[in-house]
Length: 102
Image (cartoon, rainbow, N blue to C red; front, side, top):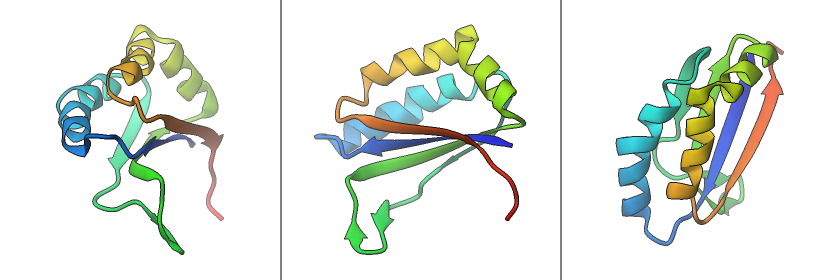
């Protein structure tokens, strides 16, 4: 498996962010070829010490790193990446990695 974790920083207007993310962006992202699973945080994104700088975490799963890269290079992947500028003005940290059972 390969994963993308997108950590969206707290926006100035959380209601507007959520409206756009769930009303528009997630529909765009779900069209990325090779996407096997799309999860988002429910509620507060915290650390063991308490508060975090993040509003929302999204985890996208693919069969392999190659499938992930192909998905991102596709027109649908480029549309999802390009859409970030429309709502993630506070910033987003994106991590990509292969995963395995431990």
